[in-house]
Image (cartoon, rainbow, N blue to C red):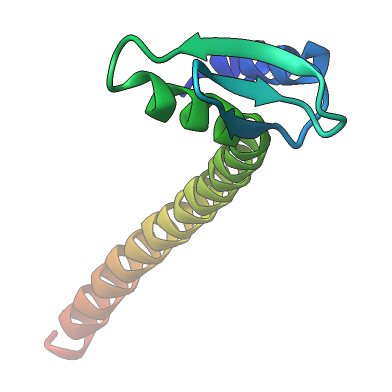
Length: 115
């Protein structure tokens, strides 16, 4: 998920009616209402999936901000791991260079001893 997608979804959450929302199943339709019982959405029951859609919409109001928080936390954590991996790689490169220099010095000293 890109940063722009996260920002767009956060903005949708910010301007939407505050939660929690709830599904209210009625005889003629399923409704999604806010915490004060105000009707936000009516989903008519002329299809077997509509009650499930209403439940999903109501649940998404509370779940989406939490999921965005999780995505951002994981993105931050991944960035920290990438930075740590870069630092470790740089240290390893330094150690490799040092090992090569030590090997060359050992070979030079062997040459002096064998003269």
